[in-house]
Image (tube, rainbow over all chains, first blue to last red; front, side):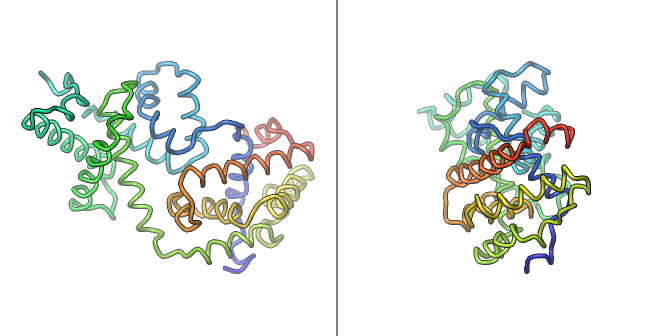
Length: 83
Length: 204
């Protein structure tokens, strides 16, 4: 693609700016998120408050569409009550 | 004993081969059922895919047994790994034909004025200034690989694919993106645009 042929959309540029707003000095990466996301999902389902460590899962999910996609799928499975 | 009362890590490590085989089979079935629910309705997933994902997931879970710390149900933890296995593979297939050269070339264009219009976020002075500062920061403060990674993400390219193309690990790739975001954020802050301003502008 030559520059300009696929100009970034408002949503894409807004997405960059939003990500910057959510960026903190210390964040979970995808591996750390995966390690803790099951605890976060169970807490969310039970409406339990989450601790500081697990809150980082929530922050990572806001920044990472792939981990969020997997989290939503996990919620779907938990809601089906097969685990 | 019901399945919900199974001590999965112990059963999966059992020295009694019969007990261990039963636990492995039960876990595989759980993962398979979970994947069926999660991926239901996707046109690119058939029964053979579910079988493959369940088997690959089972091996991954068994390999990581020592990492389970008991902070959630074992089956929830294992299912999260299974979903990661399945979605990673599905994303990889979708983007397998993209080359590093194409990604770097696109990333290089990220700083071009033609790529990000001044008024893309709105025509008022503050938003035009925000976009101008952002574009300068992308041009001056990021490496070609950081620009390529950001553009890849904007194009919804899977992160695994991006780091594979860039020849780095997943954790190093995430750090590279994190460093890029921090650099851009710092540049905005130096220009007097704070995180609060951004959050207010976008109702975060």
